[in-house]
Length: 264
Image (cartoon, rainbow, N blue to C red):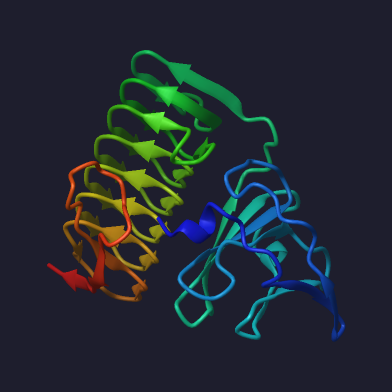
């Protein structure tokens, strides 16, 4: 994971309205669940910025010159991730439920989420597996260095999202509109569904997606990225990761060359 996201960048964006702009509000926690917050993630200048989501016709002015309005896609109060490519252009906006106090989850064993078709939770430490059956499951972590799932993550349903978590095992998702942001996965990421977003994650294994309309930006991957269908895919700023010392941490010098998203 790029270290810019651990030390939040200040001053890359401004809030603009009607041709004028002012300084963006002070940055906050990129891993929090506070409502009405936007985080810029990805490969380009401006990634790592945390700001208040603007209102009305206001926008977030990016270094690329683009002025993005996450409020046009996300509902009032929802948290947003603005994903930018290596040119600083917006390629996707991910919206998360407006839940400033998601249910905390810590467990010595396995955890099952989404029994009632929705669940918004904050993960501390879970020793076992996390499974979810149902739509609209969101898992917030406090950062990969803080929140850890000791087993695998397996979810069935649309609109599964997870950010700011370390997963020791595989991540296996079946459903459309999955999002993984600011995560560390020590196993493989295997997704069966369309409209997947994976941004600013470190994956020791492989990323394997069976679906189209994928967005994969600014990830470090140990065993490559393969897609069953490369139609409408955004694949930008991804690099190889060689865990030379075997500690499962992206250390200086272990990031490699740029990698592409190959079709099976």
